[in-house]
Length: 143
Image 1 (cartoon, rainbow, N blue to C red):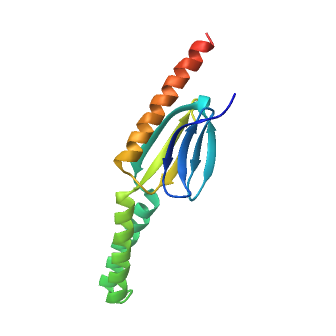
Image 2: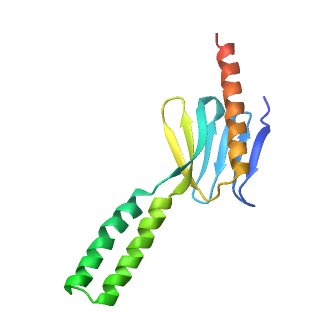
Image 3: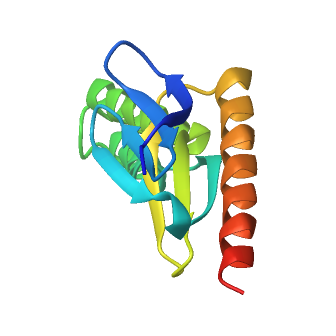
């Protein structure tokens, strides 16, 4: 049986998301993965908060203000550390978009993705529709 491309979304000239007749291929700056189409349960795009920047910014910010107030560090250093920690906390609170691929065996794979627009949301809806239709067709054949 010949493999053909059903859906393809270009993130830029080198990176893409592609659904073929056998695989879902994800090519991002940090990873290149292929998933068997029949093993995929769903694909989603979620905005998630980043816990490490939230924790570091939330701890260092108040401590640097206290240290500057009691004279452990200079006022300029304490305020600079507070501003840096505040920015770190802000970026953790804003979060980042993650592409989540759920497999039928319960495994979840998450990939950071830099863009979020209506085109990629529409692509993911089409992707889920194709996968659900293919899975229902595959389950009917096995009955």
